[in-house]
Image (cartoon, rainbow, N blue to C red; front, side):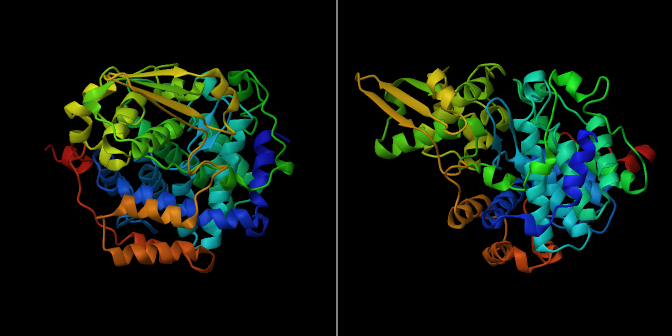
Length: 473
């Protein structure tokens, strides 16, 4: 039996009864977090471009959409994945040398659960299954260190979860996974500097490809089941043998996942938390700062401190700012927090933060690296013109898997994300629906989510629609 066939059988036999009490407790927390991120993304430029794409090519379809309208399930999954990912405030899974955004699985699970007329329990199972499958490929393989992006594993997790919710046979799920995996790999250079808008949209492209393969498999199309261990397969590309014993895996990926407390890339969370705590204890005048020194574990340095993935020399966009420790620490010192407001264009380009970020120095601490990912240590040292030195050190932050969010903390984050996007009464209904997810139908949740309307920001440069092109305009 191939790895894909074993995975497909694992997915096909999954049931809600397989979820532990802790998973069932945490699933609504993570789902509310994903919805908050999705709602906060509505109307932003690149996301609006995705919405226009869905409107033009997604049809009217049977699927309700967050933010209103309908589409076919392939484009609905694309849309919902773009939403949950774009703000870059959703949850993650952390391994020693790899990572992934587990919430990249949420949009597919939500879409297919709605498509089949499923229950809240179906949605919970789909989320749990997707999170677990992607996480297992992260901790059993080395995709990113071999130059492949962490969205590559979504070919496995998207179709494992969606295939199960769609009621496909293990054989059909296997072919759906194989077709997506052989076709939809992406490169880790999407995370390298200078960062582009595609950093926040690559996972939605994975969803689009996976769902196309899924429905082809339902029609009987077959894929290369030896995509992992076959000649020139994934094992060959990675230089290792992927050997996951799916018979021994549970469905507990949600309890291993980490929720972000701050709107910044995952490996910077503890450093940002350290700075926020520091300025809460002692007010600092930025004009008196000589330098800010940050000690972090290796992956934080590689992704956001100037290591393996480089450093943007000029910070002008959201994508650059949320992956730059100098910007994040500077704005945290000035504003006392890092939330979506800290990534508005006029905040990023303001002189105070642009001047202060140039005083930030980041370096890896090997002792911290040895403690990661069980702990996420960081230390901040601020040196002032009067000779005073202020230091603070942390070893985790609220949201880390070892320090999981409570429902109340998730509600607080949700409220902060969605303020001003719709009527407070509607958001109370959404929170109540998510908290009682085991007892509702997904269509009832989607009915609420479809009522959200937000002001649209300018989209990326507008191009002709196909109708306009055909008409010669």
